[in-house]
Image 1 (cartoon, rainbow, N blue to C red):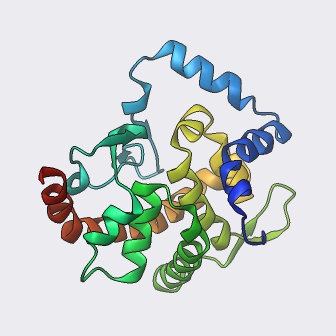
Image 2: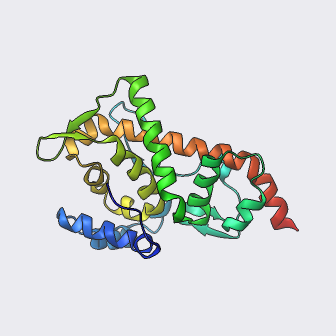
Image 3: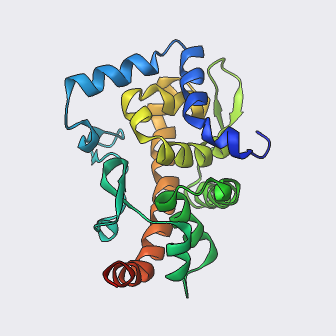
Amino acid sequence: MRGKLTGREVALRAEELVSLAAAHGVDLVGAAGRLTAGNSHARGMTRQRGTNGHRYQELVEPSALRATGKASHTFHRPAWTVAELGQAAAGVAEIPFKAACYAFAGDRSVYWQLWSALQHAAHQLRARHSWPAQVRDVEGAAHFYLEALAQLVLDEDANRNLFTSAPALYWIIAGVDESTWKRGVRERFDAVQRRYLGWLGEAMSIMQPRLEELEAD
């Protein structure tokens, strides 16, 4: 497990992903350039996910969260400051509020609290759905992967363009090969990710009307 991130390490997270991809033979910078050059609408693209035939969109906030903010993160996500979110947070539970701070204000200080909550959620889902506790890693050894899925949810949320440019990042961070990822780990990631999106939806269902009032003042 990684140690607690410092502010500088959080700021370098995208660079860490580039280095991680390069170590596995993936030219993330080149892939991002090709994606941008080949599709001016790449930020709104969708992609196929899952082995059950269902179509999944690229990770975006629930439709209830799509509002006009002062600025925009990737995929037109509204942006607010932590202070603004705090003004609107009365009655919002701790973890949903921290998820909103991470997603909408770029507050990386809550990373490990969210990671811990997502890891707990992943273990709950494993028990409910009888997921295996381990899968085979890229070398064929038994691999505890739920902690990596919790990390993956947060890393993708903070670096969506990089994951769109190089989907191999998903199975690289999960610690498995592409085949294992597609055979079941991806669907488990989707389930953990939906828990995170649920927190965002819970927070913003309370906070968004108040934020809109603040912006109107």
